[in-house]
Length: 419
Ligand SMILES: [Zn+2]
Image 1 (cartoon, rainbow, N blue to C red):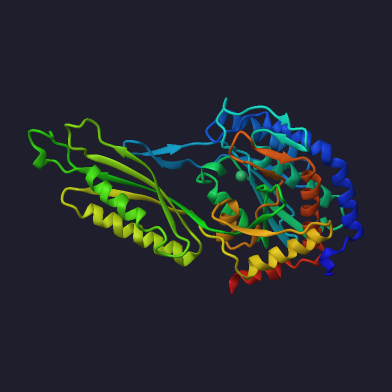
Image 2: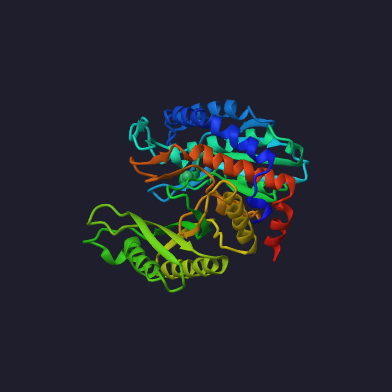
Protein backbone atom coordinates (compact mmCIF):
# COMPACT_ATOMS: atom_id res chain seq x y z
CA UNK A 1 0.00 0.00 0.00
CA UNK A 2 1.38 3.43 -0.91
CA UNK A 3 1.64 6.31 1.56
CA UNK A 4 -1.27 7.91 -0.24
CA UNK A 5 -3.60 5.08 0.75
CA UNK A 6 -2.90 5.38 4.48
CA UNK A 7 -4.88 7.55 6.85
CA UNK A 8 -2.80 9.98 8.91
CA UNK A 9 -4.07 11.63 12.09
CA UNK A 10 -4.87 14.73 10.03
CA UNK A 11 -6.81 12.63 7.51
CA UNK A 12 -8.82 11.02 10.31
CA UNK A 13 -9.67 14.44 11.72
CA UNK A 14 -10.94 15.58 8.31
CA UNK A 15 -12.91 12.37 7.85
CA UNK A 16 -14.63 12.73 11.21
CA UNK A 17 -15.37 16.42 10.73
CA UNK A 18 -16.88 15.88 7.25
CA UNK A 19 -19.05 12.99 8.39
CA UNK A 20 -20.44 15.37 11.01
CA UNK A 21 -20.98 18.03 8.34
CA UNK A 22 -22.96 15.76 6.02
CA UNK A 23 -26.50 16.84 6.93
CA UNK A 24 -25.49 20.50 6.86
CA UNK A 25 -24.01 20.13 3.37
CA UNK A 26 -27.20 18.50 2.08
CA UNK A 27 -29.42 21.22 3.59
CA UNK A 28 -27.26 23.99 2.21
CA UNK A 29 -27.22 22.46 -1.27
CA UNK A 30 -31.04 22.17 -1.23
CA UNK A 31 -31.29 25.86 -0.30
CA UNK A 32 -28.97 26.77 -3.21
CA UNK A 33 -31.05 24.55 -5.51
CA UNK A 34 -34.16 26.54 -4.55
CA UNK A 35 -32.70 29.66 -6.20
CA UNK A 36 -33.17 29.19 -9.94
CA UNK A 37 -29.92 29.82 -11.80
CA UNK A 38 -30.65 28.88 -15.39
CA UNK A 39 -27.79 30.28 -17.47
CA UNK A 40 -30.00 33.09 -18.87
CA UNK A 41 -31.71 33.95 -15.55
CA UNK A 42 -29.40 36.83 -14.68
CA UNK A 43 -31.46 37.94 -11.64
CA UNK A 44 -31.40 34.43 -10.16
CA UNK A 45 -27.67 34.09 -10.85
CA UNK A 46 -26.98 37.42 -9.16
CA UNK A 47 -29.04 36.39 -6.13
CA UNK A 48 -27.13 33.13 -5.69
CA UNK A 49 -23.77 34.80 -6.32
CA UNK A 50 -24.30 36.86 -3.17
CA UNK A 51 -25.29 33.80 -1.14
CA UNK A 52 -22.20 31.94 -2.39
CA UNK A 53 -19.92 34.89 -1.63
CA UNK A 54 -21.16 34.80 1.98
CA UNK A 55 -20.68 31.03 2.22
CA UNK A 56 -17.15 31.12 0.78
CA UNK A 57 -16.26 33.86 3.28
CA UNK A 58 -16.03 30.99 5.79
CA UNK A 59 -12.64 30.25 4.21
CA UNK A 60 -9.29 31.79 5.10
CA UNK A 61 -9.22 33.75 1.85
CA UNK A 62 -10.11 36.95 0.08
CA UNK A 63 -13.55 36.73 -1.59
CA UNK A 64 -14.72 38.97 -4.42
CA UNK A 65 -17.44 39.07 -7.08
CA UNK A 66 -15.97 40.15 -10.43
CA UNK A 67 -18.13 41.49 -13.20
CA UNK A 68 -17.82 39.12 -16.17
CA UNK A 69 -16.88 40.61 -19.54
CA UNK A 70 -19.57 40.57 -22.27
CA UNK A 71 -19.37 37.80 -24.82
CA UNK A 72 -20.40 37.57 -28.48
CA UNK A 73 -23.21 35.55 -29.99
CA UNK A 74 -24.46 35.54 -33.58
CA UNK A 75 -28.18 36.33 -33.82
CA UNK A 76 -30.63 34.95 -36.42
CA UNK A 77 -29.92 37.86 -38.76
CA UNK A 78 -26.23 36.98 -38.73
CA UNK A 79 -25.24 39.97 -36.59
CA UNK A 80 -22.92 39.92 -33.60
CA UNK A 81 -24.71 40.53 -30.30
CA UNK A 82 -22.94 41.17 -26.96
CA UNK A 83 -24.41 39.33 -23.94
CA UNK A 84 -23.76 40.23 -20.30
CA UNK A 85 -24.15 37.67 -17.53
CA UNK A 86 -23.79 37.57 -13.72
CA UNK A 87 -20.54 37.92 -11.72
CA UNK A 88 -17.69 35.45 -11.35
CA UNK A 89 -16.96 34.49 -7.73
CA UNK A 90 -13.25 34.55 -6.95
CA UNK A 91 -11.45 33.49 -3.79
CA UNK A 92 -7.72 33.88 -3.32
CA UNK A 93 -5.87 32.35 -0.40
CA UNK A 94 -2.18 32.20 0.58
CA UNK A 95 -0.80 32.95 -2.92
CA UNK A 96 2.81 32.58 -1.78
CA UNK A 97 2.47 29.12 -0.21
CA UNK A 98 4.76 26.52 -1.87
CA UNK A 99 1.91 24.42 -3.31
CA UNK A 100 -0.86 26.09 -5.28
CA UNK A 101 -4.20 24.67 -6.40
CA UNK A 102 -6.86 26.11 -8.69
CA UNK A 103 -10.41 25.01 -7.81
CA UNK A 104 -13.32 25.64 -10.15
CA UNK A 105 -17.03 25.12 -10.49
CA UNK A 106 -20.15 26.73 -11.90
CA UNK A 107 -23.34 28.01 -10.32
CA UNK A 108 -25.54 28.13 -13.41
CA UNK A 109 -27.80 25.23 -14.42
CA UNK A 110 -29.42 24.18 -17.70
CA UNK A 111 -32.92 24.82 -16.29
CA UNK A 112 -34.67 28.10 -17.20
CA UNK A 113 -36.87 29.63 -14.50
CA UNK A 114 -40.17 27.80 -14.17
CA UNK A 115 -39.08 24.58 -15.90
CA UNK A 116 -37.87 22.36 -13.07
CA UNK A 117 -38.09 23.51 -9.48
CA UNK A 118 -38.09 22.10 -5.98
CA UNK A 119 -36.26 19.31 -4.18
CA UNK A 120 -37.92 15.91 -3.77
CA UNK A 121 -36.75 13.07 -1.54
CA UNK A 122 -36.80 9.93 -3.67
CA UNK A 123 -36.76 7.88 -0.47
CA UNK A 124 -33.85 5.63 -1.39
CA UNK A 125 -30.94 7.78 -0.32
CA UNK A 126 -31.32 10.05 -3.32
CA UNK A 127 -32.71 13.56 -3.76
CA UNK A 128 -34.17 14.93 -7.00
CA UNK A 129 -33.80 18.64 -7.78
CA UNK A 130 -32.31 21.17 -10.21
CA UNK A 131 -28.55 21.52 -9.95
CA UNK A 132 -28.20 19.29 -6.87
CA UNK A 133 -25.58 17.18 -8.66
CA UNK A 134 -24.60 19.58 -11.47
CA UNK A 135 -23.23 21.23 -9.50
CA UNK A 136 -24.43 23.04 -6.42
CA UNK A 137 -23.62 19.89 -4.44
CA UNK A 138 -20.10 20.03 -5.85
CA UNK A 139 -19.68 23.65 -4.75
CA UNK A 140 -20.71 22.64 -1.24
CA UNK A 141 -18.24 19.73 -1.26
CA UNK A 142 -15.45 22.06 -2.41
CA UNK A 143 -16.18 24.54 0.37
CA UNK A 144 -16.39 21.98 3.20
CA UNK A 145 -13.26 20.14 2.01
CA UNK A 146 -11.29 23.39 2.07
CA UNK A 147 -12.64 24.24 5.53
CA UNK A 148 -11.62 20.79 6.80
CA UNK A 149 -8.16 21.22 5.29
CA UNK A 150 -7.77 24.67 6.81
CA UNK A 151 -8.71 23.31 10.24
CA UNK A 152 -5.64 21.03 10.01
CA UNK A 153 -1.97 21.80 10.59
CA UNK A 154 -0.78 22.12 6.94
CA UNK A 155 -2.69 25.16 5.77
CA UNK A 156 0.37 27.38 5.41
CA UNK A 157 1.89 24.97 2.91
CA UNK A 158 -0.94 25.22 0.39
CA UNK A 159 -2.71 28.19 -1.18
CA UNK A 160 -5.43 28.35 -3.78
CA UNK A 161 -7.46 30.30 -6.31
CA UNK A 162 -11.17 29.52 -6.63
CA UNK A 163 -13.19 30.48 -9.72
CA UNK A 164 -16.96 29.90 -9.65
CA UNK A 165 -18.58 30.77 -12.95
CA UNK A 166 -22.11 31.84 -14.04
CA UNK A 167 -21.91 30.45 -17.58
CA UNK A 168 -20.42 26.94 -17.71
CA UNK A 169 -23.53 25.36 -19.20
CA UNK A 170 -23.37 27.77 -22.14
CA UNK A 171 -19.63 27.43 -22.72
CA UNK A 172 -17.79 29.69 -20.20
CA UNK A 173 -17.45 32.39 -22.86
CA UNK A 174 -17.64 35.14 -20.22
CA UNK A 175 -15.47 33.35 -17.66
CA UNK A 176 -12.84 31.61 -19.82
CA UNK A 177 -10.29 34.38 -19.26
CA UNK A 178 -10.80 34.24 -15.47
CA UNK A 179 -10.25 30.44 -15.49
CA UNK A 180 -7.06 30.81 -17.51
CA UNK A 181 -5.77 33.65 -15.36
CA UNK A 182 -6.39 31.74 -12.11
CA UNK A 183 -4.79 28.57 -13.50
CA UNK A 184 -1.75 30.48 -14.68
CA UNK A 185 -1.15 32.29 -11.40
CA UNK A 186 1.11 29.46 -10.26
CA UNK A 187 -1.28 26.51 -9.87
CA UNK A 188 0.32 23.06 -9.83
CA UNK A 189 -2.91 21.07 -9.86
CA UNK A 190 -6.54 21.80 -10.73
CA UNK A 191 -9.64 20.50 -8.92
CA UNK A 192 -13.07 20.91 -10.56
CA UNK A 193 -16.36 19.82 -9.00
CA UNK A 194 -18.53 18.35 -11.76
CA UNK A 195 -20.52 15.35 -10.48
CA UNK A 196 -19.10 11.86 -10.50
CA UNK A 197 -21.32 9.08 -11.84
CA UNK A 198 -23.68 7.49 -9.33
CA UNK A 199 -21.43 4.41 -9.41
CA UNK A 200 -18.59 6.63 -8.21
CA UNK A 201 -16.68 6.61 -11.52
CA UNK A 202 -14.96 9.82 -12.59
CA UNK A 203 -13.99 11.31 -15.97
CA UNK A 204 -10.65 10.45 -17.57
CA UNK A 205 -9.69 11.87 -20.98
CA UNK A 206 -12.05 14.43 -22.48
CA UNK A 207 -12.46 15.47 -26.10
CA UNK A 208 -12.28 19.12 -27.09
CA UNK A 209 -15.45 20.92 -28.12
CA UNK A 210 -15.90 23.57 -30.80
CA UNK A 211 -18.89 25.71 -31.74
CA UNK A 212 -19.04 27.47 -35.11
CA UNK A 213 -21.49 29.83 -36.80
CA UNK A 214 -21.05 30.38 -40.51
CA UNK A 215 -22.97 33.35 -41.93
CA UNK A 216 -23.45 33.30 -45.72
CA UNK A 217 -24.68 36.29 -47.72
CA UNK A 218 -26.04 36.03 -51.30
CA UNK A 219 -28.17 38.42 -53.31
CA UNK A 220 -31.94 38.73 -53.07
CA UNK A 221 -34.01 38.83 -56.26
CA UNK A 222 -37.57 38.09 -57.31
CA UNK A 223 -37.68 34.36 -57.98
CA UNK A 224 -40.08 34.74 -60.92
CA UNK A 225 -39.00 37.93 -62.66
CA UNK A 226 -35.24 37.87 -62.08
CA UNK A 227 -34.09 34.53 -60.68
CA UNK A 228 -30.83 34.87 -62.65
CA UNK A 229 -29.94 38.08 -60.75
CA UNK A 230 -30.19 36.37 -57.38
CA UNK A 231 -27.51 34.40 -55.53
CA UNK A 232 -28.95 31.86 -53.08
CA UNK A 233 -27.28 31.78 -49.67
CA UNK A 234 -29.32 28.66 -48.85
CA UNK A 235 -27.96 26.78 -51.86
CA UNK A 236 -24.42 27.62 -50.74
CA UNK A 237 -25.33 26.59 -47.19
CA UNK A 238 -26.74 23.28 -48.40
CA UNK A 239 -23.48 22.31 -50.08
CA UNK A 240 -21.59 23.47 -46.99
CA UNK A 241 -23.74 21.34 -44.65
CA UNK A 242 -23.24 18.21 -46.74
CA UNK A 243 -19.48 18.81 -46.68
CA UNK A 244 -19.46 19.37 -42.92
CA UNK A 245 -21.41 16.20 -42.17
CA UNK A 246 -19.06 14.26 -44.47
CA UNK A 247 -16.19 15.12 -42.10
CA UNK A 248 -17.56 12.68 -39.50
CA UNK A 249 -15.13 9.86 -38.75
CA UNK A 250 -12.74 10.93 -41.53
CA UNK A 251 -10.31 11.17 -38.65
CA UNK A 252 -10.32 9.04 -35.52
CA UNK A 253 -12.63 10.45 -32.85
CA UNK A 254 -13.64 13.59 -34.79
CA UNK A 255 -17.37 14.30 -34.99
CA UNK A 256 -19.25 17.25 -36.51
CA UNK A 257 -22.92 18.05 -35.99
CA UNK A 258 -24.87 20.74 -37.85
CA UNK A 259 -27.46 21.64 -35.25
CA UNK A 260 -29.37 24.53 -36.83
CA UNK A 261 -29.81 26.48 -40.06
CA UNK A 262 -31.47 29.88 -40.22
CA UNK A 263 -32.19 32.17 -43.16
CA UNK A 264 -34.42 32.83 -46.11
CA UNK A 265 -38.00 34.04 -46.04
CA UNK A 266 -40.67 33.79 -48.77
CA UNK A 267 -40.51 31.17 -51.51
CA UNK A 268 -40.61 33.81 -54.24
CA UNK A 269 -37.46 35.53 -53.03
CA UNK A 270 -33.96 34.22 -53.67
CA UNK A 271 -32.60 34.01 -50.09
CA UNK A 272 -29.72 36.37 -49.38
CA UNK A 273 -28.90 35.02 -45.89
CA UNK A 274 -28.19 31.67 -44.28
CA UNK A 275 -26.68 31.02 -40.84
CA UNK A 276 -25.28 27.52 -40.31
CA UNK A 277 -24.61 26.57 -36.67
CA UNK A 278 -22.57 23.49 -35.85
CA UNK A 279 -20.46 21.83 -33.21
CA UNK A 280 -17.38 19.62 -33.48
CA UNK A 281 -15.49 17.33 -31.09
CA UNK A 282 -11.87 16.17 -31.35
CA UNK A 283 -9.80 13.94 -29.04
CA UNK A 284 -6.45 15.76 -29.14
CA UNK A 285 -4.73 18.93 -30.31
CA UNK A 286 -3.72 17.49 -33.72
CA UNK A 287 -7.28 16.32 -34.43
CA UNK A 288 -8.60 19.75 -33.40
CA UNK A 289 -6.18 21.47 -35.82
CA UNK A 290 -7.25 19.06 -38.57
CA UNK A 291 -10.91 19.90 -37.89
CA UNK A 292 -10.33 23.64 -38.04
CA UNK A 293 -8.51 23.41 -41.36
CA UNK A 294 -11.23 21.16 -42.84
CA UNK A 295 -13.95 23.61 -41.72
CA UNK A 296 -11.98 26.57 -43.11
CA UNK A 297 -11.58 24.79 -46.46
CA UNK A 298 -15.33 24.16 -46.70
CA UNK A 299 -16.08 27.77 -45.75
CA UNK A 300 -13.68 29.01 -48.45
CA UNK A 301 -15.33 26.75 -51.00
CA UNK A 302 -18.79 28.10 -50.09
CA UNK A 303 -17.67 31.73 -50.34
CA UNK A 304 -15.83 31.16 -53.62
CA UNK A 305 -19.21 30.69 -55.32
CA UNK A 306 -20.10 33.69 -57.50
CA UNK A 307 -21.95 36.34 -55.48
CA UNK A 308 -21.59 34.57 -52.12
CA UNK A 309 -19.68 36.11 -49.22
CA UNK A 310 -19.66 35.34 -45.53
CA UNK A 311 -17.90 35.01 -42.20
CA UNK A 312 -16.80 32.13 -40.05
CA UNK A 313 -17.14 32.59 -36.27
CA UNK A 314 -16.10 30.30 -33.45
CA UNK A 315 -13.58 27.57 -32.81
CA UNK A 316 -12.52 25.17 -30.06
CA UNK A 317 -13.74 27.03 -26.99
CA UNK A 318 -12.74 23.98 -24.93
CA UNK A 319 -9.55 22.33 -26.19
CA UNK A 320 -9.11 18.55 -25.75
CA UNK A 321 -7.90 17.12 -22.43
CA UNK A 322 -6.15 13.87 -23.37
CA UNK A 323 -4.58 11.43 -20.87
CA UNK A 324 -0.99 12.69 -20.97
CA UNK A 325 1.71 11.81 -18.41
CA UNK A 326 0.58 14.52 -15.99
CA UNK A 327 -3.06 13.45 -16.16
CA UNK A 328 -2.08 9.82 -15.60
CA UNK A 329 -0.05 10.83 -12.55
CA UNK A 330 -2.94 12.79 -11.06
CA UNK A 331 -5.45 9.99 -11.72
CA UNK A 332 -3.07 7.50 -10.05
CA UNK A 333 -2.76 9.76 -7.01
CA UNK A 334 -6.53 10.25 -6.74
CA UNK A 335 -7.06 6.51 -7.08
CA UNK A 336 -4.54 5.74 -4.34
CA UNK A 337 -6.09 8.42 -2.11
CA UNK A 338 -9.56 6.96 -2.64
CA UNK A 339 -8.23 3.65 -1.31
CA UNK A 340 -7.65 5.33 2.03
CA UNK A 341 -11.43 5.62 2.47
CA UNK A 342 -12.37 2.37 0.80
CA UNK A 343 -13.06 3.72 -2.70
CA UNK A 344 -11.90 2.01 -5.89
CA UNK A 345 -12.12 4.97 -8.24
CA UNK A 346 -12.34 4.43 -11.98
CA UNK A 347 -11.62 7.06 -14.66
CA UNK A 348 -13.66 6.78 -17.86
CA UNK A 349 -12.93 8.70 -21.09
CA UNK A 350 -15.75 10.90 -22.38
CA UNK A 351 -16.76 13.14 -25.28
CA UNK A 352 -18.26 15.58 -22.76
CA UNK A 353 -16.43 18.76 -21.84
CA UNK A 354 -16.14 21.02 -18.78
CA UNK A 355 -13.96 23.63 -17.11
CA UNK A 356 -11.29 20.94 -16.68
CA UNK A 357 -10.63 21.33 -20.42
CA UNK A 358 -9.98 25.06 -19.93
CA UNK A 359 -7.68 24.45 -16.96
CA UNK A 360 -5.74 21.80 -18.89
CA UNK A 361 -5.41 24.17 -21.87
CA UNK A 362 -3.96 26.73 -19.45
CA UNK A 363 -1.18 24.22 -18.68
CA UNK A 364 -2.46 22.79 -15.39
CA UNK A 365 -3.17 19.05 -14.94
CA UNK A 366 -6.44 18.47 -13.16
CA UNK A 367 -9.17 16.15 -11.98
CA UNK A 368 -12.60 17.52 -12.82
CA UNK A 369 -15.28 15.25 -11.35
CA UNK A 370 -14.62 15.76 -7.64
CA UNK A 371 -18.25 16.69 -6.94
CA UNK A 372 -21.05 14.60 -5.50
CA UNK A 373 -22.24 11.34 -7.03
CA UNK A 374 -25.39 11.71 -9.10
CA UNK A 375 -27.06 11.11 -12.42
CA UNK A 376 -29.69 12.02 -15.04
CA UNK A 377 -28.14 15.49 -15.10
CA UNK A 378 -29.61 18.03 -17.55
CA UNK A 379 -33.02 16.37 -17.11
CA UNK A 380 -35.85 16.84 -14.61
CA UNK A 381 -34.83 13.46 -13.16
CA UNK A 382 -31.48 14.85 -11.97
CA UNK A 383 -30.56 13.23 -8.67
CA UNK A 384 -27.82 13.30 -6.07
CA UNK A 385 -26.74 10.47 -3.75
CA UNK A 386 -27.01 11.82 -0.21
CA UNK A 387 -24.15 9.73 1.21
CA UNK A 388 -21.76 11.08 -1.36
CA UNK A 389 -21.47 14.55 0.20
CA UNK A 390 -19.29 13.42 3.09
CA UNK A 391 -17.53 10.79 0.96
CA UNK A 392 -16.48 13.19 -1.79
CA UNK A 393 -15.66 16.08 0.56
CA UNK A 394 -13.36 13.69 2.43
CA UNK A 395 -11.70 12.63 -0.84
CA UNK A 396 -10.95 16.29 -1.61
CA UNK A 397 -9.74 17.07 1.91
CA UNK A 398 -7.40 14.08 1.75
CA UNK A 399 -6.05 15.24 -1.62
CA UNK A 400 -5.36 18.69 -0.12
CA UNK A 401 -3.62 17.09 2.88
CA UNK A 402 -1.43 15.02 0.53
CA UNK A 403 -0.57 17.98 -1.68
CA UNK A 404 0.37 19.99 1.41
CA UNK A 405 2.39 17.32 3.24
CA UNK A 406 4.19 16.21 0.07
CA UNK A 407 2.82 12.68 -0.24
CA UNK A 408 1.33 13.95 -3.49
CA UNK A 409 3.95 16.00 -5.34
CA UNK A 410 2.06 18.83 -7.08
CA UNK A 411 5.11 20.53 -8.61
CA UNK A 412 6.35 17.19 -10.02
CA UNK A 413 2.95 16.41 -11.54
CA UNK A 414 2.81 19.89 -13.05
CA UNK A 415 6.32 19.41 -14.52
CA UNK A 416 5.03 16.36 -16.41
CA UNK A 417 2.87 18.70 -18.53
CA UNK A 418 6.03 19.98 -20.21
CA UNK A 419 7.08 16.67 -21.79
ZN1 LIG B 1 -21.77 20.95 -14.62
